[in-house]
Amino acid sequence: MILQFRCPPEIKTKVDELVRRGLYPDFSAFCVVALENQLLLEDAPPSLSEPAEPRNVQRVAALKAPARSESSPQPRTRSPHSNGIPRECTLAVIPESPPFQLRDQLSSVFSPTDSVPINRWLLGHYNRLLPAKVSCRALVNLAKEGKVSLVVDEIAPLIAEVAAQVGEHLRALDEELNSHRDEALSIAFPEPGERGAKGRLRFQNHFVGQMVKGQQEGLLVGLKLAFMEVKRNKSVIAPTQAGWEFARVPNPILDNGAGRPQSLSDQEIEFLLSHIGRNVPVELFAYRLLLSLIKNGKDSPESTNHALMEYVDSSKLSGEVETYISTQRGGVLGRMKDLQLIHRERISTSFRYHISDRGAAFLARVGEVK
Image (cartoon, rainbow, N blue to C red; front, side):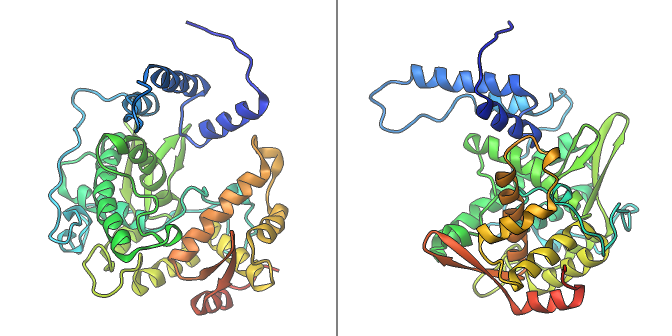
């Protein structure tokens, strides 16, 4: 059935942005989900004090995710490690060398000295690096089993399931540590069960990978820790040599380290900074630019956004430019925070960014953006 209706331009723009980010395949799918949500609200008993779990979660996943064949593997129940971390994320089960040839370096259209427009930066929704570590570990462990296909549509849900179990462990840690929302270790990790279906799908797209109109997307691919290609009309994903090496670096949370947990170890941070400096010029420029702006007094969200306007091509954006810049800035600063390049000072309802000693040393090494 085809329906026509009047839609305010500002709403259409926001929906188009969700479609562009891959959260919905098209405008029609979004409309169907919205209609089902409203019908659920109309049918809900008025006496309920707590909203019922939306029954359309599975419908949303079905609209967004590709159809599965009967032969596709179903999500498996994982056996957690003794510290609550799934075995797929532990170092002990990763062999020293991969069972197949890995790609060494992937080419880039930019060089380490290039100025990279914000439109070409990694998506701002990739706002943490611990999820990339979990995905990298799980990808390496699932790949070395030799039983699980590397087809993205098959392996990504399994990795998201593992991430949901890690998320449960991290939420318990956050509660134990009474972590502020901005400092929570569990940020970006999905929930298990039916309630977390949409979050797991988002984790698959953002922190494992997806192929959209022939373009590779996802943080692992963006950081060149994994690569994707099409084989026999199916998108497959595998770790790069750097991804395999990163998976083997010990992590203070996944490997049951002592003391107050932090998302990445010093060894992991130095590995990523070195790898990004050599092989990921898009991310390198984003770090150089943000550190340079903060060093020169552009240390608030508002002043940073204003300075970043110079680096965005607004003609290629369909939504609101300010919102896009804020999202991109927030993603880069979230990743930089995990790398301990910056820290934030909360002032009332806003922030001030400060460069850490590690950040100052890194900027001195790679050079400021003039």
